[in-house]
Image 1 (cartoon, helix red, strand yellow):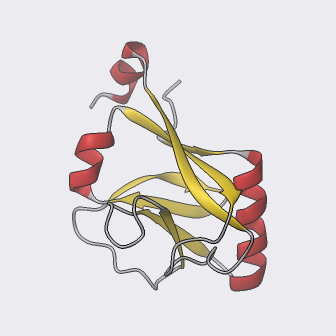
Image 2: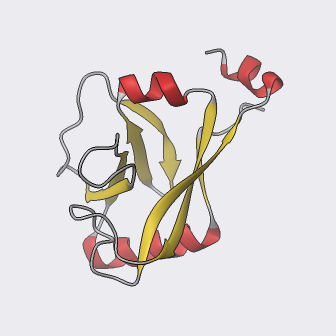
Image 3: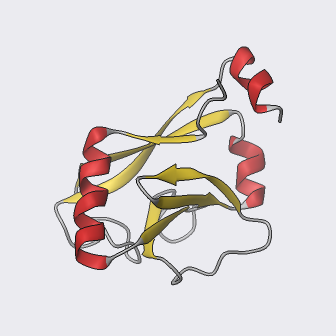
Length: 119
């Protein structure tokens, strides 16, 4: 079985469900370190212009999760885990202004998983 490149904790899924209920369909783009650090940014679908080199890592409860191609080259050996933490989200992200925000955790894929991913 091919491992997922992005997964989410139960708490992150609950936060995502609340944001979707308030805002409609959303998408994520993993920030590359500018402005709001390396926060996963949550936007209404269509409000973040994807570039031709962006890579879709997967889908979490209907929300596409993207990363820039250059950043993917650095992270391609890593599974991204969308989680939540106390605090307000990034300035441009839909989790801004609340008491919870999205964060990422990660783990390195095993050699066997890397073989399945065929990178």
